[in-house]
Image 1: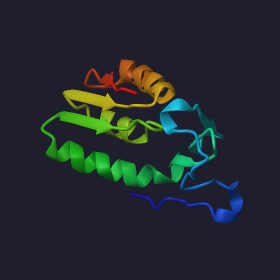
Image 2: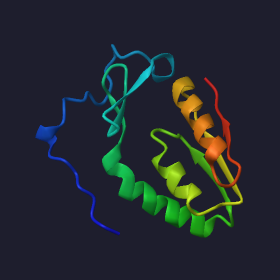
Image 3: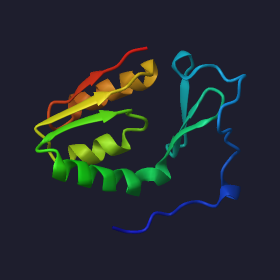
Image 4: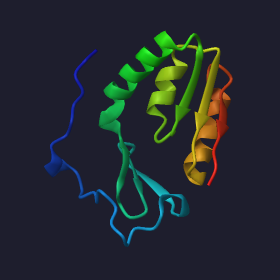
Length: 123
């Protein structure tokens, strides 16, 4: 697997992490994807970043090798791990996502997902 390029911190705009007491609860706020390289919440706190792709792909490889064709993923985020899971053609691939706007993206992904895909969540 090729090494991931992790951009120097100076190349990235500031991201607040962890959220402080003034941050709106995650499920009540919108999300924003910036330049396809990250998912941040409305307060600018990092949720997921594209440089996590090699890690998510390694997770998918392991989980799919051990899952007997049935995979449950909790948290869709940018869909990185779900795309990697889908490439393994599982018999069943279920995504559980609590955030309403991310849940909508997960549902769109599930319509194209190998293994049928289903999305559930709450909030």
